[in-house]
Length: 612
Image (cartoon, rainbow, N blue to C red; front, side):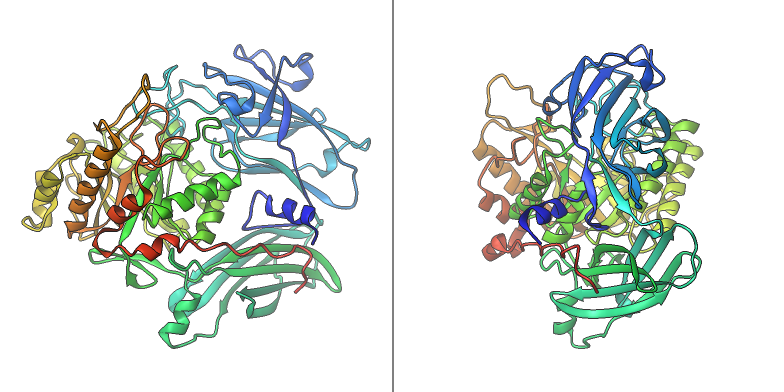
């Protein structure tokens, strides 16, 4: 595979479902704001006053526009060249905030609602015979609507407190790919560690022909683990692929995934009709299990202490969109260098490349649904629909160990008093467990727990001795949960007492420090120097490590984010004090200096033209 081919292959936007023949539609598009909602069809637009760099939102500087005002509607248009052939063509959008309508060559393709999830259209029959294709997108995104999942996007004109600039329209990659008329539409790979198996579900799209065969090859570090062929029945294959159990722990551990040794199993699928290869897809999975038992989190059946940091996933020039895939990799390397083994992605559904790097570099991740801020029929409907799409998109990533549908009762503001709000959280908790029975779920993180596998506590008390006094071993858990109200909220809702779930402090710290004059700063507490920040962080971490009831922690936060200046790193990803000092404090008494340099290099993706 030549260098140019390899580069294109590695840039594929969906790295756990990779094909060869695809084209990127990012770049310069025509653009206009339509605040008065004058236009309903792209043919009505005769002039395009602006250009925008897709996939960056018009609010951010990298888009070339940088307009952070209120805009209800915007339009995009670009041309691209494609000559029709015997292949089907699928047009993909990574994410468009919030409601998208799409046209190709003035033909309406369809719409999608939900600002954080992908969607796709088969454009084969709409493609122009001339070769020049005109793609148009209308994005509606009411900046004042609090009933849609919006996460940290502010409803005030200027960012305030812990909310940030808005993201309107296209903010993830737009691309298309060629497939055969009969092709693999979806795969689900699920490790079953207790049985030493990999669950495999494959769904086929297209005319239902008899005689279709699916070849599945699993390999790890050059060794073939399984190489099987199955008949496709009713466009589906459902199999549990048993692996040879090594027996001895030392050999078993070589195949297990963890942040310390993120071993991945490469998966190659081929769809055949007789001697004709119809489709070829590359993916990967991992053998690992996650659970809570007693008062501890278990990774691969063993207690594992979670050292996590809250990650907002914003950049100064590009906002919610990462500058590039390497920026995501760099973030994960910084998190690991600072001594953490996980992140809680806060109020954001991250770009799929983030999970690719987390899988390959070794980082556990909590995925959290961006909140709405009103409780209405529409808001609940929107959350349920989009959350189901999130889980479906990211189910196969071994790095994801836990789901969080709600945070701090946002969107369910009367959770402690109203049964309807309690039922909503319980419904999302059970729906999540239905879609994915292999991972734990926190129904509402921070306080006011009604349905959860882990009781998460948000407490920004900046006095280490007070934290020890609150949560130390001199109290039993029942006393702790009834006596203290961090944030003024009860930790468990009346009628839903603690059921023995493990406890974790899932937000704390939030120490603000900025050494640049004239900067607006916000934080839960403040320091005046880098030395003071280091000292305060070390003392807080020492206290947290001493509290035995916690099965881990999540510190607020990874980087400064706009006016919220309580990151361990500045917004440009430079550390505010020594990384070595940071890592020693994060790891606690068990710190080993050698672990700082143990970040593994991800294996290259397989060549797309390799046959089974």
